[in-house]
Image (tube, rainbow, N blue to C red; front, side, top):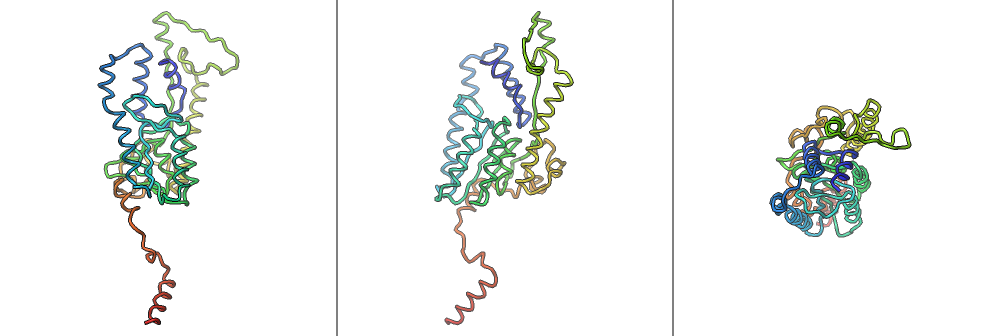
Length: 308
């Protein structure tokens, strides 16, 4: 099972914070090598994280007090999440899309707030949930709050909201896509292991870990990464109302995270505020006369004066 997970990890294009990618790689490599921590150590490492994640989701669901849907986007984004006892929470992009559509269709909900704290994740499903959010704009306010991190794929998702808000200590960005290839041919040679692939189809076993990645294979993987990166950049440009060149440029980080103040200055976000402040603002009753056109207000004043 661990080898299958490791193989899938290397075969997957990621829109993920590089530090999280490195941590996942380290854990999967350890599993694949047969290293197992004692159950007591595993439990100590996980601790109360699963319960804490569940509590945080429940608190988010209750934060809007019914009228405002607070949708959690926590941990690694994956197409179809599974319930696992792990220290890092996960968010299914399929479930997230369904939650967004349900909230948009619910007449009792006046606004939707995405509570985002995620390093991004697998590229699969991220574009689809981003497109879903963009398609729902205009029906009711959709606000994404980086609370405190919206990195890579999570920023892809957040950027499709009507408004992006960052908590004062937060950050957004890490715009980019990545893949990894592990060449273990030298290790195999040392260990006396030789693998022969029997295949049909010129490129069927391209990128396997038992051989170095040649120029043609590298070019193919680069083209895949470039394609996902281009889709990422176009989505952010459309969601934020800026040019593709701006998103690719230095002010949007070029793969780095951008802190709150600089992100607002660059146009990556609209303002700095906490999740509680955003919810409080949305909960305030709206004065119907506040948005009156000047001529309409003058006409109403004339009627009142005439009545007097």
